[in-house]
Length: 494
Image (cartoon, rainbow, N blue to C red; front, side):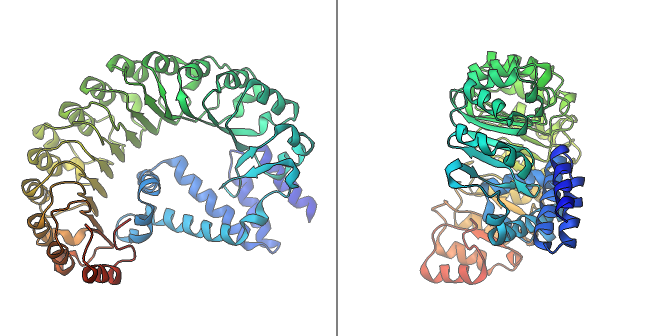
């Protein structure tokens, strides 16, 4: 029995990117008295499959998991999307199984080796940190045999770290890397090692990204990278262009970058000319992108596989926002993030002529929309596939809410955010009287101080809002709060 187990684990280590050996091992666990571990492996492999596919369901789930986790639990997704419902169910069950068994599923090592384990992925521990890499050398073989390749967390990643990992025979065991600040020398040393071809994901946090961006652009063995996350650091236009021109990085599926404020449309043209045809998730935040840059992205056929496009906190105006929403090359985008861009004055005629596509989630927090922009957007066929619409912090009052209701007509998205606007009791009365609002699963009007207790009661009493799973409102009276808590699992929607 033990030789069978060892052989199956060896197959998983030999083929770390494939699920089949893991699922065969799950079958073996079922047959040998460990059904919970078997279920856990199968469930996490299915979760990872959604992530690899990066469908509209996964783009929605990923966004909500990061920014609205309780809403995932509060919402009845069977009424909205079967894929998100399945993801929520799988994740909840995995969490339950980890609470019961997680400690015993970790490799057993003495505390003196100072090995710290984090989360699980596809059924096995996948995040590890070494407090002292020298102490790990005696148990390096046990680590490699215990779990398939992992993500290493290291806040002091140097050339010496790479040398010690190579000495211990662990360099090829590292499939992911999360590092901080002054890591350029370490990344350079790693990029010169043949084992770097095994690296699938790299995250660099904090500090100036320019040095290590140039290093990554000149890393000949970094040919298997699928995910590059530089969203928590700053990268100049010149360094970004060097990255975009590096052909060994064109295998990327996820590219998340935070700019340093000096980007232009020419910087984006280098990206769109680079042949990044595998991208499914692209984030370009705080890059000072303007309408010309947005139009460059909208006109790029290489972005046809992108499901998640996050352009938060740039300088994209109405022309650029219109181009992005109307682009035939971005028809597969399920999540479009425009928050923090001054997108006012969109083109109503272009939007009205744009057919429906894959768009499921539109984040327009702080886009400075006028009532006319709201009407033009919600009347567009491109938005008639939405599950989630965020119009937070747009200074919308009665005219904006009326434009939204009239524009949507006999349809509305299941989740609607209107926090931090000029919503008052007149606005919420319009929402309460909106017959189509029966399709809403969540409505959020928090942080609108002009909404009184009477307005909240109008929402609670509305026959058009009986299907709500979540309602976010300003601070209510004690009596109204009691009603909210009696009706909603998470009464404030968070």
